[in-house]
Image 1 (cartoon, one colour):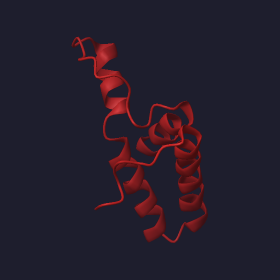
Image 2 (cartoon, one colour):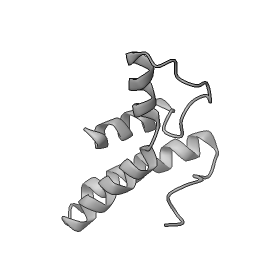
Image 3 (cartoon, one colour):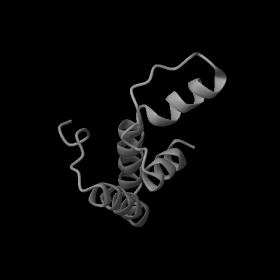
Length: 83
């Protein structure tokens, strides 16, 4: 499920998060916070898992969507490359 959430956020443009508006504590806000926080960690964990299983095709697909997201935004990822 985490991998699919990452892919959906990359394709929808909210992988890097959304506004800094604090959540109200409602169930909808808690769900939103879960979907937009920690995407970078979930993404790299999924890529690493596929590489360790020698599932190179799937890892390549994930990386392709990641690159499309950031080139579409004309931005450089701020996290994930330093660890």
